[in-house]
Image (cartoon, rainbow, N blue to C red; front, side, top):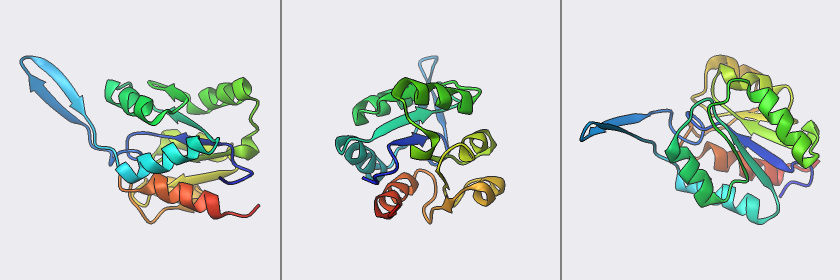
Length: 160
């Protein structure tokens, strides 16, 4: 794990997933499904195993996301968040983490306010154009196709 970065902040839709939300009607009940990348999951699990903190901050509430976060042992899960930066600042206070010790990844305009706050910011290759210009790094991988794993691998290799 990178000595400087103590916490990863992850957006979900378009970052942990490819941004598609599948809604299915089963006996009159709408069921939501998403697809998560297994390599991203391994990277997240290893980050946590090596003492790192991971926070999900998503604008969308979804039981599927909650379940995946629990499977991976993600410590902080905040869904249905309108002001992601305010949420992130509260997490920082809780753990005594400085913005200099955080890396985030997000794909759309509601993630940009976190970019300037964090030491490193990442955008998947298929993120909105403004995100790609504002991020510290743009991954080769698309959201839901290994962008988070690529971010983690890059952070491990950064020598501060």
